Amino acid sequence: MKKDGEIKLLLEERRKGASQKLAAARTGMSERTARKYEQSGKLPSQMRAPRTHRTRENPFAADWPWVEEQLRRDQALQTKTLFALLCQAYPGRYQESQLRTLQRHVQGWRLQHGEHREVMFQQEHVPGRMAQSDFTVMNALGVTIGAVPFPHLVYHMVLTYSNVEAVRVCFSESFEALSEGLEACLWQLGGVPLLHRTDNLSAAVRDLDRDGLHDFTQNYRALMRHYDMQPSANTAGCANQNGDVEQSHFRFKSAVDQALRVRGSRDFADRGTYERFLLDLVRSRNLTRSQRFEADQAALRPLPAEPLDFGRELIARVSRFSLIRVLNNHYSVPSRLIGARVKIRVRSESLELYHGAAHVLTLPRLAGRNQRRIDYRHLIWSLVRKPGAFANYCYREELFPTTVFRRAYDALLEARPVQADRDYLRLLHLAASGSETDVEQSIAAMLEANLTPTFDAVREQVVQHEPELALACEKAPINLASYDSLIPSRSQHG
Image 1 (spheres, helix red, strand yellow):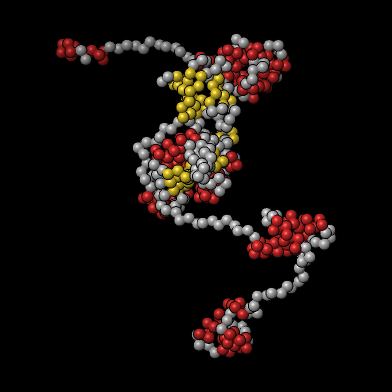
Image 2 (cartoon, one colour; image 1 turned 180 degrees about the horizontal axis):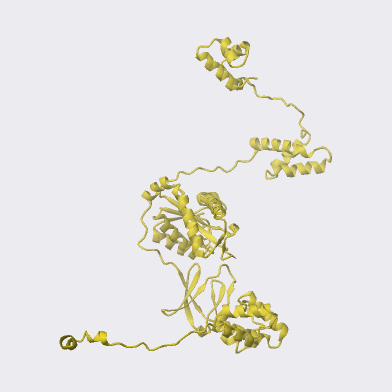
């Protein structure tokens, strides 16, 4: 059977003026074959009639009615499941190699009788019209800061026309992370699009209202009004409606992984170095989209005069346990604040505490719910006076700032069980009064030497290692001769 290309070559030779015999010889076929295709005026593929007969017997002919009945009952049944049921019902009738045959039969049935599938409608993107954003988890990349794992997210924004992107490191999907991330990304892009679409984040979207429309939170609406953007969100469970940023998540994280491999290390000296690494990568990726970004830039609206400082403000009373409860998490505060009502300014990564107009404390914000952050420095002054409270304190584990302190307590408990709590609290008091690092190093040295880290022994080591400050002060000689020339009487009569 000749191929279409061979016949096309034959016809090309004939158009050049070659005789039928010469054209057939040049294309490697007999004159009779050449005559047949010239007379028919058709290519071999056009002359081939579709085969309607089977070349071998259908091994599933006897059981196909049962298979078809199961498919009509539930089209979600997989072919592997149906094949396993057939093998179970008729042992020895079917072989493992026949699974592919059944899969082809089922596929053909689905094409003719299957349910209608969802159609995706390709959208036409307009410059400056829409930006999409979402959070993506970066933990799988294994980034470390100072050899310590750095679990984090990235707030990721993409202009749908040019696919120019902007990012900001964050640690939760809170409204504060959303608002600060959106502002940072808009300032990176240099303008404001008409629409902003996000996923169904609880920080921005409530449940659907009765008309099936999205109901946005009050804070999110205020954020959109400040930037004069229309809010939009995809339907729950339909990530394809936010497809530009979802696909960009995958490509961005792949690019970060490759850049880390080229760098040869996933460890960074500090967070700022890592953030600069991400911004440099985004900048280089955006250079490949500069042509379409020019159209986006021309259509983007100008930014406001300054970013919106949109932090929630809450009021909390410090309990007699020297704790405050903020967004379902507990934080310790200095005991001098017990009984006071403090104003808390909530940001994405911190809590700023104010009493009246005075700023009194800044705490790192906890992610999630029912978490706690207990700082021993806030409580130790009372604990050393009431050491008996330590044994059953509900946040006792939080009073071991490092593993070394935990080992010190275990060593004290083994050597001096009766006085262990009091001695350990005195060690914490020493750390709070001076340098936690110095105390920790002294404890570690004593544990390494198999010595019990008692308070007196640790304090003695800490004092010995304190640098001696030379405070010798000598009187400098005073020479007033240079001032004499400034006195008028001396300059005139000297």
